[in-house]
Picture: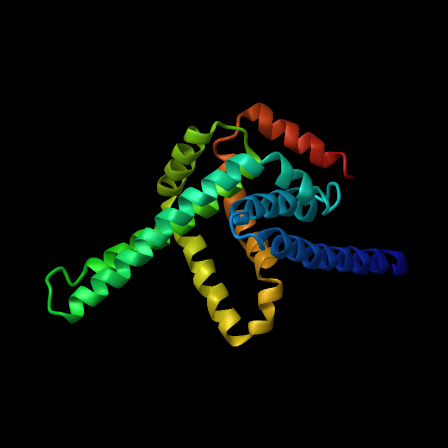
Length: 213
């Protein structure tokens, strides 16, 4: 019994350490700003492989960061540009409203589109972390998956809102926010992604997991 509890305690401690380390890696690699997309990809990769499946070490974060750098970085620059344009549209429309111009609902429309683009980015970079596809099709597939799985997309939105509320109450958690968010969305993402994996892919992952026992 002592070994059992000792083992469980050490496993838990290791997981906590992994979460802290991965969060540190994320902040470190996101400093240049233009690398945030690649950081998100590496974050999901290591969360799936190391934290949930218990394979490898958290330093594999940098393996993913390097191998997906070009695709994830170019994707992020596109998402960033679109989001900046939408933010500008929101402010322009709000200013127009204050001057009595028509289309009072326009700012809300652009805000909704902005939120959808943010969630699309989450799907997109998680998809890059899990699957191989060319640049153009990755955008198409991740967008299609987001809209086809609206209930899960709303669940992710709910987690984002809840996370922001918690951070507002406990700001110090911002240090662990990236890792905790990746952990929170992982079960949802995997439920969605597994629907589109071939039986061979699923069997390969199951066999790979069994090797841990």
